[in-house]
Image (cartoon, rainbow, N blue to C red; front, side, top):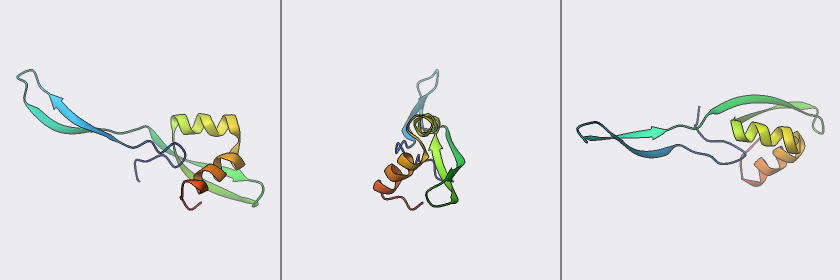
Length: 78
């Protein structure tokens, strides 16, 4: 599963882990991305979205149809 939010566009952050002896190794910070199913009443079907937790809260606030419209505006096929 891609670690990218369909709604907010949140992606992994990259950087270095620094040990006590100051050795640096590459690492990544993955966002909390989850797959959710929502009922889209206008199309009479379920849609599956890959969302970060902030994206899930946004869907709860603005509604499913508005969120799907934003996702489609970002160029993601739903």
